[in-house]
Length: 116
Length: 111
Image (tube, rainbow over all chains, first blue to last red; front, side):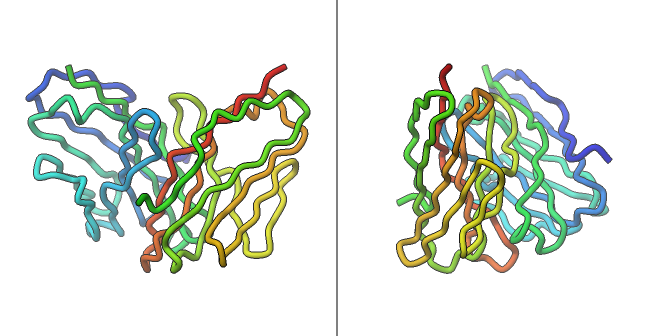
């Protein structure tokens, strides 16, 4: 297991198109998080899964955003009808149980989205 | 008010010098604290956890002041490779450990 894997690394899309990103967490980690980071800012929380259950969604996550984690393994984040304001780095992270409180998260390399 | 606030810098540091910077957090219920390092256009990576009594990891020293709700990071004998953005991270007091990130402090170590 080489850590948290995200695909694609880069995505350029036209405004109005739909995009989907994938995250494969560390295999034994039951918790998975999506964050978004724009230039000059820290990562902002979007949503969180424990196994397959989506337990919290940020108000940043508009109706155009949806995330899934079928079978509690990989996760997908879909953005419908993309807008230029969606341009950002989308980061996925995972942790084991409450380990986030002690050991933080392990992040993937991120997917950089550019909406033109 | 942001939950975690940091001086964005940049802190320009001569190689071999010491640099220190703080961050403040607003949620008094926060229990876990971390410093992450982020290189340009890369993902954040855990640098160190911050413990109540303060802790060191090589050239890095972290301190926590719960009364004043701030965390500090000190880097001794700065190396060129220490140039990065340092993110202050605090758990939000939620039971499941959601982490809140500051916007980062940029450190530039110069020869």
